[in-house]
Length: 425
Ligand SMILES: [Zn+2]
Image (cartoon, rainbow, N blue to C red; front, side):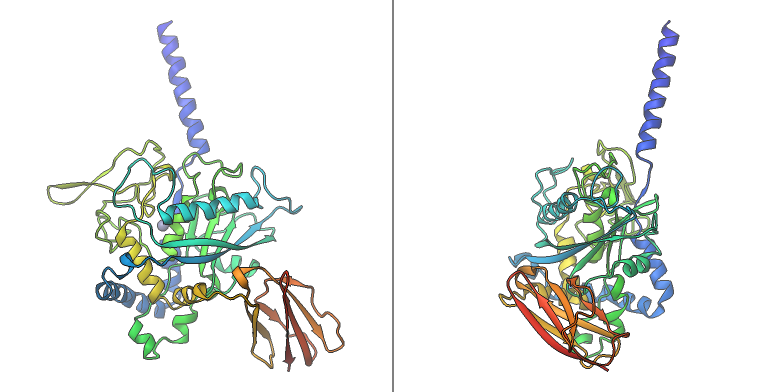
């Protein structure tokens, strides 16, 4: 009897652990470093630039020590979410549906603001006094939904595909986040910023390559099952609080994994203890993990750091050095710096510029609306006939097949309209 009971107990335990594994396979949190390796292989010039980036960041931090910490200005990053789903009937929301609900998207923006603002009600397992408000916030500007038959994407090699399916909004004005289904090994990925020395740029040495390299894919890609929180599309027990995106946006702002992607490597932040390796675990009890990176010195890993691989519930901190590093990148990366400049630009007027004019192939529209209000674009020929379907928040217009002549580009918000003329060659 006793034996039978213990056998049953053992069988039960096995079943529970198998179910646990079936629900939560050990996946790799992040594909950013793998994606970056592929990117550098394709572009040797970028490799050279990257080698100079770190010294640029360190030089900036030395010369501006403490400047950011004292500054009270908050930088608000406008966010565009591209939902790429394979739900042919375009139904929004519900279990297993990649066409996630607006509520799920908004919950992710809330998580970002809580985590980057250090205001989250839930502080994680370790209440760490080193946690800071990064002075960075996020504002959802638009959600773009696109149906595509592809069932899943690779976070390492498919950024181009996603950017073809749902083109980025200006990557020097917005943080673009593509939300889709990734292959099952990874939760998310992001594109590291390109950083140049300030004096290189003021000397005019920032080449168009620096400025434009991989501009169309600059952003973050997240599997829809780990985007946001409190949604029935999120089934993981481990990665259920939206911190995959907090982590990936950290990379997008130049942060490195706290173990430095090698044994006892560096993330260039002195206040994140050196760690033997990542905290890749399904243990949601947030048990402490220790490293010995120097002889006779054992330190606790900062597993609560957003740039580790810990379960969402265990994460609760960016440090001051990480904050300083992100602000250095926001100043030194040409695209990020431009974004900060634009984010400070507030207008009560609708402003539209279109170029080049005359145009042969692609007309670009730079539109500023009060408080990032969305707008509609209509294009007419000289006879007043509409030549394309109206589009919301259109940045680019392909005019290759337009007959030569004069056209009108009309931008409309809720209560304002501006019409610009342009000529197709
Ligand atoms: Zn990562």
